[in-house]
Length: 509
Image (cartoon, rainbow, N blue to C red; front, side, top):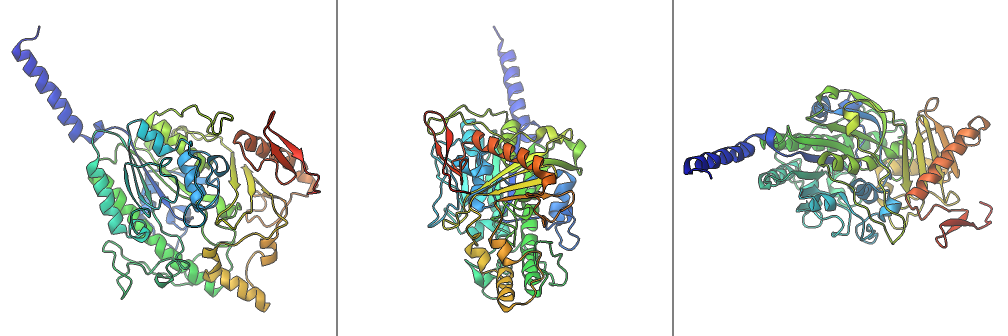
């Protein structure tokens, strides 16, 4: 039996331990900060753009492993965010197209998402910015400031507002570990929704009359002659002006990222937090967003782990999918993935992997898959793809129809320039024609070792016949493993009973 003195000493010791845990950030639980750009690309110093100024992304890269072969599994806003937050491709989680307004796509009610699993594990969750997924029961957050309860301009582009919301979240955390998802709305286009602010909302908050003022933003302007024109964008004055506007908006996001990371440091969480930066899909230019070509699926990816400094500043060539983000975060928190099924069918299994091993040793990962069905509700153009090393294979399931163009991109200066030049019979200064862009072969195969711009489809080249057959087999296997409803299209009909199989249509496709 303890004496009063012993009891007092024990109590003081416990109090000291508690106070030490509260005051010492090194004793805090592991946390995650996920930062996602909206239609972001490789316009940054870390990815060798020598014109644009992105000091905060560049500084984060110095404390990160830099991935050069990271890809989204779908090139559309809501489907990509749903896939990122579930680890399941869009055809498996149900978010086939955009979530908002008349599009109204949702993930299936029984999908077990990352925020749901983290909530169940006692981890505090927060989202600031663009959510763009549903339903709420599948994607619950303890702390939420999104387009559902705020102006998306304020929570997604006003970096001062974002900074204060991050501070509010970090001040509200207790001893629980946390997952904070900061989803910038920059550098998404806004010519379709808020044209008064410019093609990329590059004027929003710049202090000019009617534009409002973002106190923490110091706008960086670029002359069209300065920009680096990607190979998939026509080199014309209109496209250059478009890119210059995009650069300014990327700069606002970069400054916002710096503010977010400074809040993390000021709160004392920088040495206990895994920081991940990426984007949802390719940039909104030709062959970019809504396409499964390289410009539509290739993404920036920086992962900064305070526990893995040995690879800070290094570049990984491993092939990474954004489907790997959910298993990575679950691994970081030691949260297991549950055993469950959708619609009473096969057990759901994540096809992605944790990226934590790559933070210690370079892996030999060489394969990623992609799946797109819609974007806007009218844009049904299903595509499936696999990238295996230097070979990129795309299956266009409805290639006899014209590739659809979304409203946002249609009104852009870049696309209008292509339309006007084509109609007038003028040179487009583009690596494609509108006809070849609209009407595509059913099978597309590109060899990046000899054709990095994906200009020559070698699917019908006899020298690639064996490779084509193997890639078709790999893709079909993945479609079956992920319960793809389009697995039999366009040649057959999927029947589940007595066992799932494809029945031929004999439609000569």
